[in-house]
Amino acid sequence: MRKSIISAILLAGLLSTLPAQANDIVLRGDTPDHHVVVPGDTLWGIAAKFLKDPWRWPEIWGFNKEQVKNPHRIYPGDIVELEITPHGMRLRIADDKASVKLSPKVRTEQNGTTAIPSIPATAIEPFLSQPVVIDGEKLVYAPYILGSSDGRVVLGKSHPTYVQNLPNDQGNAWQIFRPGKALRDPDADNQILGYEATYLGDLKVSVFDKISTANITRAKQEILKGDRLIISPGIIFNNYAPHAPSRHINGRIISVYGGVTEIGKGSIVTLNKGARDGLEMGHVLGIYRRSHASTLERKHVQLPDERTGLVFVFRVFDKVSYALVMQSTNSIKMLDAVKSPQLYKATN
Image (cartoon, rainbow, N blue to C red; front, side, top):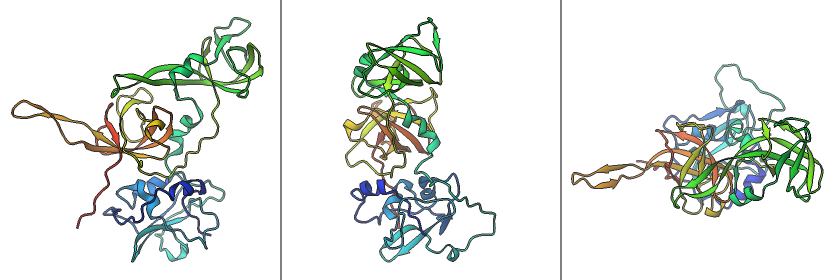
């Protein structure tokens, strides 16, 4: 049975964004005629073997509704092939694996393996299940830990814990966090867009009251009196189809996760644009360096922006977003611009 690559969830949203034709997609100079999917592959990584703009793979995937019984997964062992037709090109899963000549090497196929993700799942999973950004207003009214009856300074797993200002209509599963640095918008007079949140652990409420009783079920770091609570988020899907924003985006990188100073492929960055600006999960943005130079007349002029990488937006808040750096062709710095990516152009 041939399996397609895009999930049913993604397909519904994707159809409205696909262009009528994808004739402007440019192949790599060393494009193979096929690729055998192996554990650890991602949809982006496979597309990068064929396309100069790998995030555009959804535009040229071929679908055969009569043959595809389960049109939402691709697994290790499947063979992706490039097909050239009179109407253009397309990537597809080989109908007959025996028709594709494979080189004589050891290949591993695992039954029951999970489908490969769009982007490296392990890099972003903690950001999908834990608090990352807290709005300033929500921070003011967030419930907080009062402490324990025995006066412990540091609270740990299974310690009875008392909580102030806890609502009783949002469930009994909560996450514990500590507010971190303020995220400021350099393009809006350093306005505070929110606060980074350090995830500390999980808490389950046993008794709701003016002062609620709870138990810490997980302690990732030390938990102290005054640490805040936020309701545990629901399931956030991470297998998004990449696509360019439908409206113009012109933002900046305002923070790098982990306190590192160098930004490169695999880095998690914070953008000063969010849902209110039209960003959504799955958007791909180009990273552009803003450089300046002096003329002979000693005038300060801005040089044309130079693209230095691509980011994939995987979690969106109202005013900010988190993105994974997927490509890096040059050094990337704080405050570099992010905007809709310019496409590679075919040359004759």
